Image 1 (cartoon, rainbow, N blue to C red):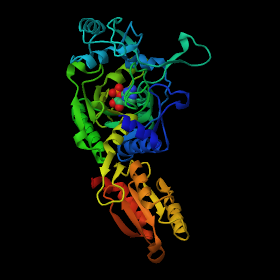
Image 2: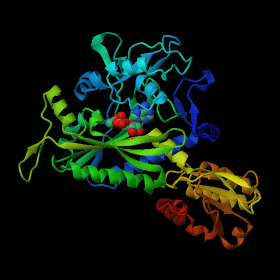
Image 3: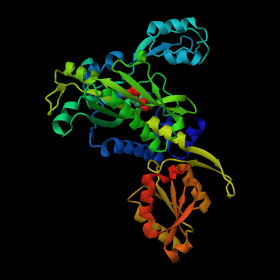
Image 4: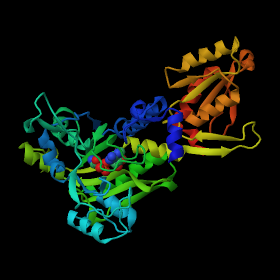
Length: 464
Ligand code: GAP
């Protein structure tokens, strides 16, 4: 993890937030390359789930919503983690994490009383800071961030930052149905920030208090929900592997029935085997039944149902929800792509290379003149100017060509296009592939089309 954190900082992917003030725990800022990577991941998600399908549309709902939304969704009453405080150090911990880190007990889903009992009785459980064993009782702690709307900080103005993007989809179900041409089965997708006052955030951008989600609610006729659930598990798996993630590092984890969330009939997680944390959730794919629409109908007094125009059937749709975190997914893509390679027969004997799929790579291609001198550099600049509107392209004329390649390898740039002396004669350039390090000579007039094809098929990644 230290290696990844320092790599992310060194190359401008992710910085500690407010670093000049000593940083704030578990808040991170994305740098010039990180913002491109995360944006590309979100764009790929949107392309695959919305643009490439006829049956999914998007929304972008508000972060601050009516407080009743969270009563209806169950978040006000039940969106809690169990909290214990150590009387010796004054630190607060998530009770389940404290138990699970010291014992083999699976604490998820235990009640406050059960957790208190385990912590009191099992002597292996100690305050990680000072080894103390004097803890308060476990108590539920609601994870929603509170705020106030307007100038009066009274209970009548209490509001919350959304803890998930999903509810803004359910509350717009009727709007979308009334104003677009969707028919069940159909989905509504949304991406955006969510906020949770996590007791123990950690593992870099894996668990933070402010994060971005990519969620889709797919509305289906009851009875077809189980099949659609399978379809979406497969579809999501294919998205990760299609973008080059190693299937060996992915697995589907089935939630045991007794541990399902209050709204779920069945949930599976797509997990990634992080080197620092083991198998951890990247996204959940849940069958949320008709829970959310029914609750919002009950709390709002509005009818949230669907009438099949063909059969006249009225029903409250069931919902299949793939819900991913953009930051976690970005971390997994970085970890999966990061390599330190020994090279044979090269002047450098090792390189760091980020084998990102070209579609999500922050920079798609770099253009180099072999020399800074005219007219080679002018020719290279012309090519750069020609390509830059299509993709994020980088121009570099400083340093030895080998060093320039290494710099691009390290940030995951899949292709480097070099203009050399021969170009002046034959109007051809070399395109170097990051993964194979093979170079091929291509007429300048074909570079744009060639890059387009290489980026969209991800042939560099396919070579891995
Ligand atoms: N609407 C369902 C829902 O929000 P979730 O499993 O709580 O389900 C979905 O969240 C995804 O959001 C997770 O799989 C994870 O990728 C991401 N996520 C949740 N909490 C997070 C946190 N504190 N930091 C970063 N990502 C988080």
